[in-house]
Amino acid sequence: KLNTMKTLLYLGIILMFASCSSNESESAASNESSVYVNGREVSTIKIGNLEVMTVDLEEVIEMNWDDAMKACADLGGGWRLPTKDELNILYENKDKIGGFANSGYWSSTEFDNDVAWLQNFVNGYQIDYVKGYFSYVRAVRAISEIATSNESESATSTLNVSGREVSTIKIGNLEVMTEDLGEMKWDDAMKACADLGDGWRLPTKEELNILYENKDEIGGFTHQFYWSSTEYDNSNIGKWAWLQSFVSGQQPRMNKHVLFHVRAVRAISEITTSNESESATSTLNVSGREVSTIKIGNLEVMTRDLEGSMTWDDAMKACADLGDGWRLPTRAELNILYQNRDKIGGFTIYNYWSSTQADNGIAWDQFFFNGQQGHGFNKKSSGHVRAVRSI
Image (cartoon, rainbow, N blue to C red; front, side, top):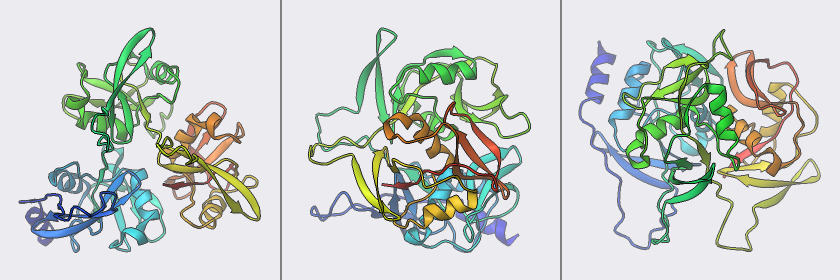
């Protein structure tokens, strides 16, 4: 069939290399660059900690999920299909990135073995979609932040864990331990990482895959399966979570009571600066009152809730109406806020909305007295709201 032929042609030979500038005066901090795909030059743009292509993989071809995953991976150089949360960041910045169709785009996040998450780039809705159906594809890759202008500065450091020194390494916007914490159940793994303090935690499903892709650089992965913090969304919610094989790279789901190995990570805070006069906090005017903000990783976060509790639709609108990129945090970002709640300040112990939808009538929320995230919260219910924006 025509679509299949085009897909096979697309998946044939892909030649890609980063464009280099012979002009030494060109700024290394530029947000735009280009790569070569199928003999054509494609521009890219940096959005947060992602590099994003400004065109779809093939302007006229949609493809099924398996072909989309393979097509992105075949580009090499770390290019991949964006996760569900990353795809929402692309949607929120679609005008800045450009080139999106008024249609659905695949994410790499699976709902189950036959269904994956897709986002409608007309209204922003995220739905579960059969993997065999065809949708559009936009490739992304994580921006490595290992390189430093100080050539003598190493990407590794050390910390003390239970009386012994453990080295860590920076991979993208994550700091990763180079040794396992041990083998344990999922609940014990979540607690063991959190008990380390200072933002250490179990990696999400997507972050765990980044560890797998960099396993040789990180080192110390001597066992097959490792836990992620991401729970499996089905009728057994609370009983299953995702893990990853560090042999094959596959990500199966497993009952939380089974023992698997654990590697801790934490987000790298980009607040510190060599310019001592630069503050990690700032202020802005919201509805006639001054509100301070704080930088957490690659997010700027308000230190106060928006006034009152509200429905999900009102929460999405209230954040967007602030302008300048302010928005409701994704499910993953909301968990970062929870982990840094004492540093940010001003949170209640009740539930907060995320922008991540479970389906058209339900969205994810998080309770700030125990950190539990639920995917069954009706959008017409009331929840508290904290606005963020990407730095």
